[in-house]
Amino acid sequence: MQDIELPIRAASEIASTHGVIPDRCDVLQNGSTLVLRLSESLVARIVTHLDGPRQGSGWYARETAVATHLARHKAPVIPLHPAIPPGPYEHLGFPMNFWQFVTATGTDPVPETIGKTLHHCHEVLRDFDQPLPHLEILAESIRVLDMKHARDHFSPSTLEMLRGHLTATIGILGQFPSQPLHGDAHLGNLMNTTCGLLWTDWEDTFTGPVEWDLASVIWNALILEEDQTTVNQILGGYRQAGGEISPLALHHSLIGRAAVMSAWYPILYPKPSRDRQIKLQRRLEWLKTMTSSDQSIIALNFRN
Image (tube, rainbow, N blue to C red):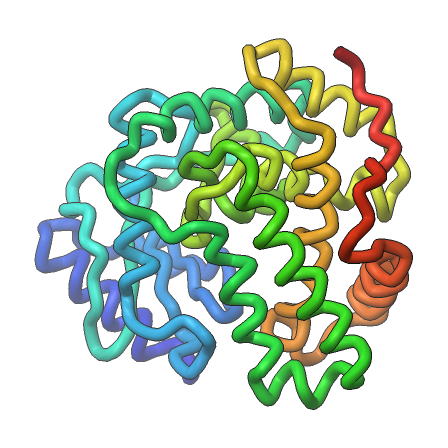
């Protein structure tokens, strides 16, 4: 607990300044980001990995602006806390922002609803008028491959393969229609709550084709779990809500998503479990079957 005392103090002091008195300290997550429940309604999210690839609070500012816009227009998202101005904040060296606590139901989300809620967010995001970087997670992942973490973890040939896929994906996806996105729309950033199915964690927000978010949410089910039914239901829900999906853009987004997740593994999981090691190896083996110039489409077979 000693190593998180200072960020806890930082968040508590900011909350108190705005009249929200912390009466508890429940640690909901303790990784590169520390997530604390400080009162019945208040959750603080604090960056503690201060020497990581993301420096400063610029990306937190983008997240805060996007989350504020989404909540204001009644999108299915966890809102920022209403008693504390949006920020973001930096105190005692720690960037942070503050969110409304929501109660998880503990039940799995309905796949069709996943697609429908993601489409709802995309619809609201089309009116977001502040600048966002284009395909930023892909460009950032190329920079991550040049860091010591990646060079120590991957062979030169694997680094070359990942860099090639990331570069190719940037060029290909740049040819498709673009709009603000979640950026990291996997199921871990979706909560089934007593208020409904809500998206959270908008720190990776950028502009790109909507297929990027769809690839992020179906990747594990499609490739690791070979669960075509769930994939069809998620994509079907998105289409039923009015969304259009380009199979080619989705194909290349799936490749880019696998390369991004692989590039970040040494940073996110410096001591990976056996299960995580297996998942990484399966991603890399799958990527080796994908050539940068491959224009064939992964067999998705989703319903029209």
